[in-house]
Length: 200
Image (cartoon, rainbow, N blue to C red; front, side):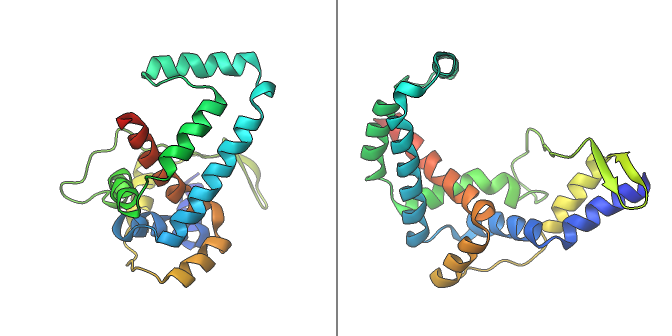
């Protein structure tokens, strides 16, 4: 199985998608999103919320019960889908680029500063890996990897130099790698809006 370890780490280093994801997490922490990016993510968030509110009568009772129980356990205010959308619309108008980038930098610090002196200690590093893998010529085999190999792969991914990019280039990048780039950006907007809701 030693070859399996080597193959996994080698693929992570060679895979352009993985490198771009690590690169963007670090760049987002350091340089933040642009006003154009924020506008796009905010628009997507509002549209998703509007669709959810429109489906209020189609949500199964068990899902509503799970939501209420989870919200109560976390100390969150319980609102139905329409109330939540109305609050989101009001909060969205108050969100600023500076707040989003400030919150995002704090959220992503544990990744972008991993291994650096004074970096926040992660509670856990979770890796999603398959139980079985298919290898040409060998067939299906158990997938095994050690914690040491995971941390080594993360450290190598953090060694690539980062730089800010122009708005136009970042828009092109967003089109090419939508989910991987947008996930972190989208999370920033959510965190910032949750902070606003907590103050209202």
